Each structure stands twice: as structure tokens, then as C-alpha cells.
Length: 79
Length: 437
Image (cartoon, rainbow over the protein chains, first blue to last red):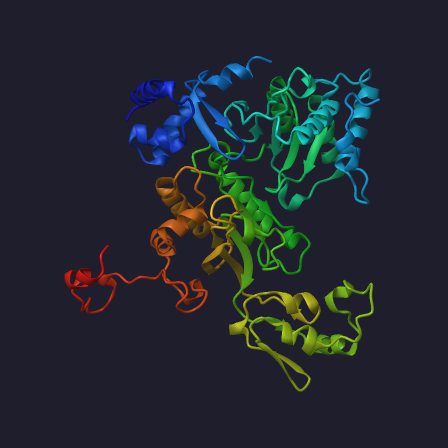
């Protein structure tokens, strides 16, 4: 799977789910891509680097979301 | 004059022990006094406000921190933990109060000059509040604002040659004991192995793709000063496979009182004459020691490396010469299913750079956990769910009596038909008539 195809898939699926949730586990993204975690990681890292995705962390767990989406993104930029 | 009254916190200063409340008050006063001389990059009242917020937390009986955040430094998915207060108007100094984890030096060796540089940086761009050290081992910087994160990261990496540590679903900052640098019991170079794995697994440390946290801890010997056996998904514990070396003259010197047991550690009180039977031999958990006349004997094959005899008589007993490490997996703290200690996976492996054999085991387990682990499932929980035998299959390690705690109490070794010479004699269909799935 090339990068453009992977990105389009991720953006489409995550946008569809935006009404119910904005943060996703890494394995959710790997499942969307239908790839093994190590192969998916390279593509997902690139999506973070180019600003498509962003990390969210509670401190103990990390999740991914489309950049700028979710309630928290807005709240974090208030201050 | 304190910005917020803190009657509840003040009680925490009343005991005989050192109080973090007193430390915070001192720091708050210091920041207020030096505000005209130092151009603090985050609000001067940050420490006053953390005291006020904590007082409110005690009063309300609930936290006033929001959950997590999206902040970080470019290219890293860990090392920064976003913290936001839900009362920013009352406590503007802690509206942003992000944590930064700094990867501690191996064995936590550092010069005072290095600590001063870190503290100067943190006083200037953060709250000045640190945690030395977090339970993962990191040097923890508590409390800064979003615009300072990249600035601090730049200073750390470019001027102090210092990286951030791990947080979230990453490999956490690997942590080791002082090892061969100072300790006679270290069976391998903990700092070298810790450093090499830290460098080799940079991607795993900084870019989260695991189901949950993953910890490496390195103990040079079974005394386990880093407590890896209780806390780490992978514990690397030094051991030896030949015999404990005995200096019989030194044994007699302990018995005769010329040498103090435990290197004089308990000399503050008179415990009477050293009694080797009572204080060493009878305390051996496997009962593998005895005296033959004036000679101390050890049945080494029964020794389970409890280290007690070596700790009591360090001049008489020494670790063996054929040294390496044991790998235990799956320890964790009690979030789900209670706390778990590590389970022995590799009884003995030589520790030789570039550590390919060790890395091979790590990577096989990671591949399994990344594919099969549920979200927020630690390795120890996956082992419990799918079975230790599955772990043996994915690592290609043969079952060994040392994997079994007691006969018939660890029923996880199941034979497959192809593994049994001659196959099965039972008919599965007949069996299923009486034993439903």
C-alpha cells in the first residue's frame, strides 16, 4: 500500500467516526490499513510528521487523532 | 505572604519527616524574591498556584486536572505529558502544567554540574519543581507551558546532550542499576546493555505503537536493586551458572568474629555472636548449605540465587565466574488482575555485545504482543490470557523444568499430537462425547 492510499483510507475512516470519537488506538489504525503493526507504524509515523494525525497521551496510554479534531484540541489552544 | 491559604496542606508539615509542602513554599518564596532578576518564562506564581490547587483538591476530594493532552515536541510521541487545570481562572499559574520526562543517565550517575544545568534550565523555563526520580527512573520536570516545550527540548538535546524519556504506549525509559561501575555482584555490564538497547530502540521509545506501556529494567544480580522482577515487562537479571566461590578462611573469620556479617550493616545494636547456622544456613530457602567440620559446603545445583548468604558474608562468598543473565517477562503493577511478578523465560543467556541474541527474543515478543495484545493490555496480561506455552512458541524456546514453579501447579505445558512420538491413542470424537468444548 502506498502512502497516499494509506492516508486517504485513514482520513476517510477517522472522519466517518468523528461524530462518536476523535481519538483512536494504534491498533485501530493498523486495522483500518489492514496491515501488520510494524508495517502500519511507518505509514502512521509519516502521517504524524506531515500533520495529518496528531498524538494524544494521557501519560500512560497514547492515542492518535486527526489533527485539530476533538473537544480537547479546541480547549488546549484556548489558553 | 502566601498567595492562597493552605490549612490542609499545612498539616502535612507537622510530622517529623521532610515535607514536600515546605519545599514548595520555599520555592514559591524564592521565585517571588528573584522575579526582578530572572526573566522567568512561565508565570512566577506557578508554585503558589500549585499549592492553592492542591489545597482545593483536598477540600473538594477530587482532582482538578483534565485528562491528558496533545502537546509534545516535534517527531516525538512521548516524553511530554499534557496537563491542564480545570480552574485556570483561579489558578492561572498552572493553567498549563505539562510534565517532561528526561531520560536519566545510566545507573543514575551524574555530575553536580549536570544537575545544576538541568535545574537552571528548568527554573528558567519551567516551574523549578522536579521529581528525582520517577518510578520509571526518569528525571521528571513538573510543570511548564506549551510554548516552552520545544525550547526546553532544544536546550536539552543541543546543549546538554540529553534526550527525553518514554511515556504513553511507548518503550519506557530503560532503567538499570549501577552495575559493574561499583558493585562486586554485577554479573554483566548493566549500563552498556541498557545504553545499547536505548539507542537501538529509539523508534519504540519515541513513537508509540504498542498496545500499552513497555518497560525494560536491568539488574546486575538477583539482589534486584532496580526491582525489575516486580515492575518490568522485560527484566534482565544477572546470574551465573557455575558455583558460588567460597573462601573458607573468610568463612572462619566470620564465624570467629573477625569479619562483621553484612559488612557491619546491623552494627548499631548488639545482636550477639555471629551464628552461621542460625543466620545463614538455616535461612537458605532451598536448604542447600551445610558445614562439614570447618568447611562450608553448597549444593550449587539447588541454589535459587536468593543472594542471602552472599549478602551476609560478602568476603567469603562470591558470585561464580560463568556469568550472564536471566530474562523474566510480564511483571506489572496492579491495574488489571492485580500485580504480577515476572515469569522466568530464559534461564541463562550470555551477555555479549552487540546483544543480538537478547534483541531477537525481545523482537519476537514485541511482534506477538503488537499483533495479539488488546488495547491497554500489558505483556503479562497477554501471557496470562493466551498462556505461557504460546509465549514459548512465539519465542521458539523449549519448555524447561525451570519454567515450572511446582510440579502439577503450572498446567500450561500441553503436548501437541505431532510432538508426541507415536501420536495419540485417544479418539477425539469419543473424548468430545464426554467433554464438551
